Image: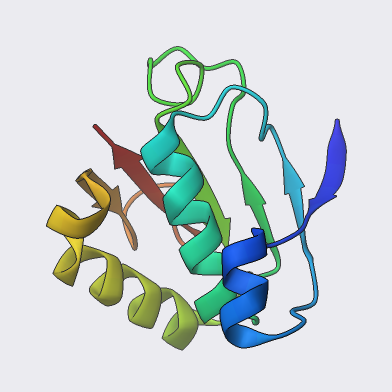
Length: 113
């Protein structure tokens, strides 16, 4: 089910109104993934959409530990997001990211612990 996820009240209070980013699979995200979602939405308004929980052969998405941050063809945005998230891995509990590898050229995949 596709929807719009609004930034949390704390993000809106700190930054003012932010346009919602289309989302899918937000139900069932673990708390660290939800925190990361808020951060990405507040920091990168150029993101096209964000996906979370979905069926997959690997456990990351079904368990609510992964987000797919869709950037379309904006490779510079993907580079910036990936570098930022890697530099803040400890803050967000990031286990790993995937970017510019097979099937990950239109989105940054991030898995949290």
